[in-house]
Length: 191
Picture 1 (cartoon, rainbow, N blue to C red):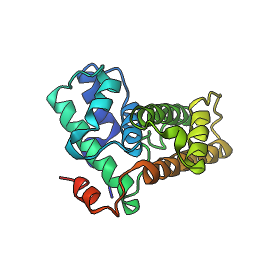
Picture 2 (picture 1 turned 90 degrees about the vertical axis):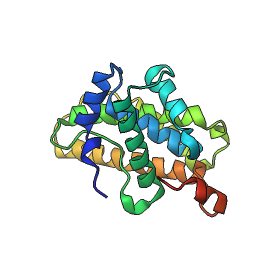
Picture 3 (picture 1 turned 135 degrees about the vertical axis):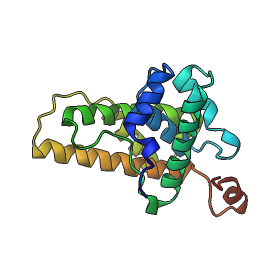
């Protein structure tokens, strides 16, 4: 599934700057994904309160940005709930210097962990696999190193990005809605 043009990083950055929100699109997407993968109720916009707490101290957003964030939510929920849609963390394109992409991945992971922690009170009771990936993500969030622009560093970055993607999907499979429950299926219909 192709990303809608409105959800390109530069469009989100412009909207965040216009609204004077001091976060990057990468951080917003990471937090939103963490909130979703942490199991926030998907019906009735329950995701927006924790996201607004993180983004804007709980204050509402200007309408243009609010609509864009709603679109980002719909796109993200579609991608994490259906493997065929190709979920991936929102990160800079590969034309960007590797150091910028590594920094963005670190920010995304930090925001993801913050988002998941906000909505998942039983994270310490999660399965051993989920607890291990959360620990590994915490290690990724702390990565600080000088990046050498070479094939080995590029391959390492790609491995970290793939791990991050799979970790988010694993968290969603554990904390997300039980799609075998007919009541949950109704609540998860995307409009």
